[in-house]
Length: 232
Image 1 (cartoon, rainbow, N blue to C red):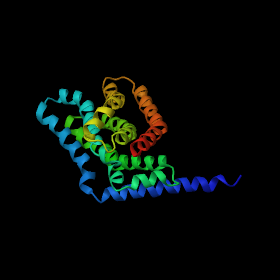
Image 2 (spheres, helix red, strand yellow):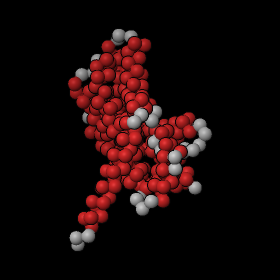
Image 3 (cartoon, rainbow, N blue to C red):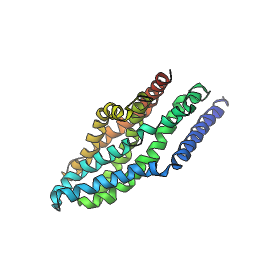
Image 4 (cartoon, rainbow, N blue to C red):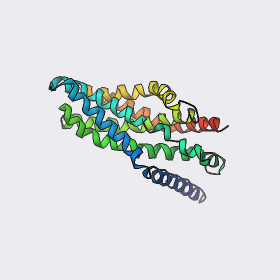
C-alpha cells in the first residue's frame, strides 16, 4: 500500500524538471518570448486608431477584437514548440527515454501558456481600457482568457507536432488549428458580450471549462501520437 507514493512523486518531479527546462530554454531567447505580447498590444491598439473615437462602437467591438488578437498572438510561438528539440535530436532521445513522452508534451504546453498565454491575460485589461471597458467586463475578459488560453496551447501543440519538419509548416499549422480554435473564440468573446447585454455568462464559462478539461485529457495523447509519427 505504500508503493504508489514514490511513483507519484517521481512523475511530478519529472514534470517539474521538464517544465523548468522548457522555461529556461525559452528565456534564453527573450525576443521570441516578447514577440506574442508585443503583437497582441500592437494589433489591439491599432483598432481604436482605425475605427475612431466612437465609444459605443469600440465597446461593442472590444471582446471580439481582444480575443482574436490574443488568439493570433498565441499562435506565433507554436511553430517553435518542438522545432528546436527536433532539429538537435533531443526530441528523438526524449521519445526513446524511459520518461513518458506525454509528460514532456504537457510540460511544453504548460510552458507555452506561462510564457505566451498568461502575459496576454495580464495585459488584456490594460488594452480593454482603450475600448472603454469597465471593471466587471474587464474581469470577465480576464477570466475567459484564463480559461481559454491554456486550451489554445494544448490544441496548438497537436498542430505543432503534426507539422514538425514539414516545409511551410507555419501556414499549414494555421490551417490545421484555426478551425479548432473557433469554439474557444466564440465562447470567450461571447461571455463578455452576453454580460454587456445583461444575459448570464454561466453557460459560456461552463463550455470554456469543458473545452479545457477535454483538451487536458486528449491533447497530450494526440500530440504524443503525432510526434511519434513525425519521428518515424
